[in-house]
Image (tube, rainbow, N blue to C red):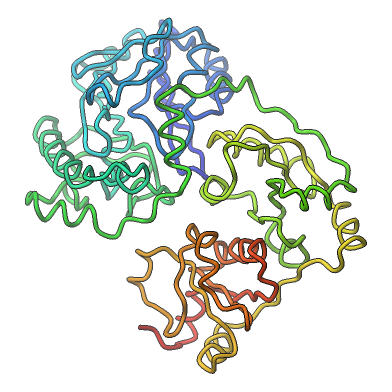
Length: 472
């Protein structure tokens, strides 16, 4: 048997290719939208993908199951659990089959048995892996968003991201019961392959190991150790990070069937002299250059999100799903990397990109670029105490447990576009987050809202704490 794990760092998401090296049949579990990666890997091992499946209707990325199954002429195997409200709308398409608890998917002597594991979502299933060539006993479980390393899948997303009131406590109790059945049913030696690692918003304390065991999690994972249902409900709902705004789009798009992408397309280079009119029209433009370049000179009114680890979260939160998007970048490789990351969350309509020549065009037409001065943590705190600046904390709500800066205004970055009007405009605004990435995105959000005097409190809350400045 072959088992290959794929991991997308910006999404903190894992997917898997399983193959029988004698029959050359293979299964892919939880593919993302980069379907070429699975096709290349299968071809390199002389495998034919015969089935593509997923653990649940994903909220944090656009699934590749539908497209990969079509490209490979394979069956798409989808959960048919959870009731009619959670049925995939494309379940009736040719070569698509519904899965129930106890069903199996085969690739030669590699068998995946479907295990219904609700709670994170009502339709969630896990897949119990048996390598029949080696043993009739289960080897491990692909747990998706059911069990992570050190954590369990959050049951509150339907309420907090999709506005389905009254679902999170019920989901928490269902999850607790499913976890109890799981640990009682399987031997402790079984391996567990979770669907996410650190950085995912699908849990609050995910560990970074690519694989674990049921025995280890029963000793270290708070969710599997907690036998008291009420205590579990309180703990699993407490301290969860704010779900990114785009999660509600992913749920809808994945349930109804992601569009067939057909590969990433290279967007055209746009003429530099069109940048002024594009900004004036209110085009959706995002500057994806490195942060240092954006701080050194940016076009006011243009959102800045550097391509990198947190790009999908903030691009999905701030960019529109109903209009085309244009990019500003230093070079084509960064453009292509951005196009891939946008496609992972269903933002496929990239109209083109402006290069570095757009900046002198803007400067000649409208004046200087926006330069962001840096201010140290100590100076920022002292000036805020004197009322000379507004100190703005854009960390998430759960992060405030680690400490607050006295006198700082707190607005989570995801809420900043809607709440920028709460900030005074008669003094500079100095932004900080945990270490610096989100606050620097927030500076461009404020400039889009008309703020002209913004400062970068370098080092974020970490620098504040390291300087032994007051913390509440």
